[in-house]
Length: 96
Length: 203
Image: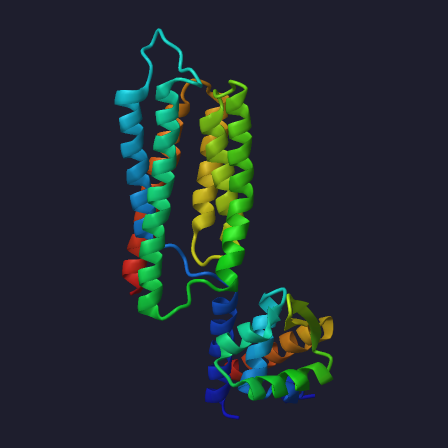
């Protein structure tokens, strides 16, 4: 088994990697906060969030603050584990 | 993807983790100023407001109220200075000031601090002012340690220093005034100077 096996195809994108980086060090973050930090468009961010949600790497919680809808995202246990594996693989690749 | 891309990925991950979870640190200058205000305030109190050796400081006397006003002035001046310096620096570095991280930092700083403040006021109302200096130091130290989880930098060491000063102060009744100067004046200036030198070096 090569190191490349631990490189996760799902994370092979700057924005997805960014989303995971923010969520593993924060309890949760809402859509606007992610947008502000990553500096991306709504549609772009939404599609990448969908992809991560489909893999069950992140948890999506919809709620209302007053009348405004607000969506909060957090990582799942699986997401955190996969992300750590991915980072370790990246580091090994660089050190090689 | 090439090795270069992976390297870029990793540095971006680190950058995002820091930016999203850690508030930019207060600059060393604001620490130095806070310490100076505290020492000037203490000097004013020492020369003008303290009772003669054979008198007692009464809670409802004019001097006591002036002392409280002086404390409030020191606190407000320190906060305003820190705010101005931090805002200017953040503007220069193009960092947002008031985001989720700042809110969390302030909340975690204020919980121990306000608890301590209210406790001291309750104690003052029942004439127990002997331990005020020690309590201020301890609760302020706890507030700093608690807030340090959300900042870059070494603010927790300042917090440890304040807590230790507060505990020693509690064990040596009668010297509260001097411990107060040490904790709020000297420690701030030392901490601020160390931070200031570090900032200069890293720029």
